[in-house]
Image (tube, rainbow, N blue to C red; front, side):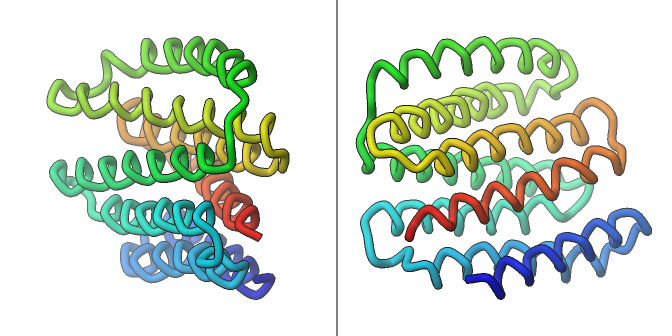
Length: 209
């Protein structure tokens, strides 16, 4: 598993370099490679050995697909397909967390906190999101919030704080993508969002063992 973490880390650094210098070829090479790293990390950790691991692996595969679909520029339909792929990935993660068991009290408290955060995020982004994307954006906010709530409830019921750490980091990394797409395209969004995203996937991949 360690070798795949290292591969992901190196590919992420190379991907950021490609973003900085504007190398589309570099992005096409290093972004899928970085994402393949977290898939192999989960696989080597035994993702196929448990229902939780298999459900989480489905989410990782959908995240890999979303990563690739978000590479092309100025392709709204492809971008939308990438968003839908990530949305389905979040659902798969939520299902995986639910399989570990849920503490309803912890989930309720998390739901209140996450709902407040989601409200302020969407209020800020909403006016900047094209009309054709708003329905998908609303659904996405609901689903990623549900994923974090399920993670919190799962940790309270079955332990392993890394589940909540990974889910929360994934949630936060989505903000950088939305900001870069709809608010202010800038390398700084990728500089913090990309490492956070890949760290989240690796953390979640580690929980299958």
